[in-house]
Image (tube, rainbow, N blue to C red; front, top):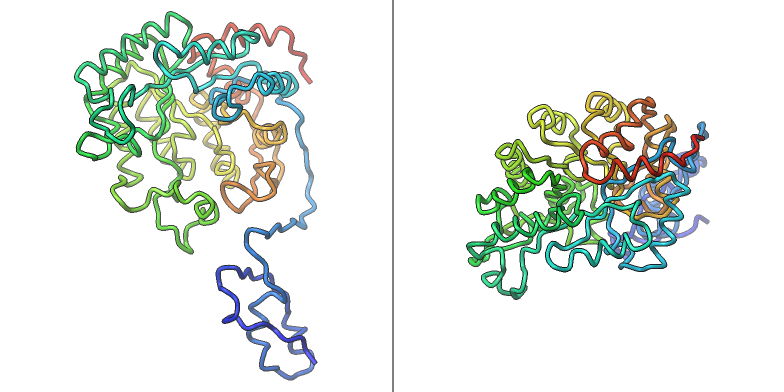
Length: 411
């Protein structure tokens, strides 16, 4: 007698994953069609939670894992407060990893502009002054109450002028850039509770001051395209959004994805003397043709790779062409500090033509249920992406990179 197959009605549909437990040959070998065959062909012989699914690839293809980068690297996008919580021990451990991975310099995004920004800088510089540069981020709320946007500093008439003054001081004290988080456009609100616009003319003096001071702006605008779509069966990031429902910006009074990027681009166009870094491949790694159009249109725009090899690596032909064409406009970044296992995947993606390998060390991919392919960049392009472009663009990087590279022994 065949084993009884549990009824679909007895188990919530959301926990079933089709794994093809019963083949056509197994069902029909006797020539008869049991009553349970149709349902058995659709269901696993035992239920499996999607969150527990860990498929192992059966591909047997050449693999060329990397233990460090081919050339000394500048990581332009890191978060040492967010990831390490300003831990001294964690910093020591990561600097050892930087040495092993051939990371010469990291740019930290976690210093809040104001009288205390140097506290974060001192955390990094006290023992490692030659390994880090620091970007400051604007404190839009200030002394105001989080639940009362009308009390926020950014709504005071002199706010932009005060920020410009603080930026000048920070530049004199060694700051290398400015970080703008995605909350500008998606989180910060006006006194009437509407969302603050990225291209609000009130902020123009801030963008202009950055240009005058030579401070590039790392601007994170919007998020992956899928985060602005319904969280339904057609959303390719459904699993991720189930784990992080607050990452969804669909509905409510959130602007559309395109509206946010258009607003950012208007700012870039209005301030041609200011250098902008579009974080996370300008938040459009899914559409490199569009990013290329922006790079052609805005000479003061560059992009970084932070947390986007997951997107770039699933379109290796298009991505490689993008790297080759815009090799002078792309910066290496990770959004880390990450474990060495993940850093090694960045080198593998950029340096090899390996097929179908993970983009994260986590057993369940955090940004999409797929694997990636390498783009095998030529050495002259790797050098630009790894360090030359950052040395040219970000104050304080070149001298630190040169000091590290003097002791670097090529593999």
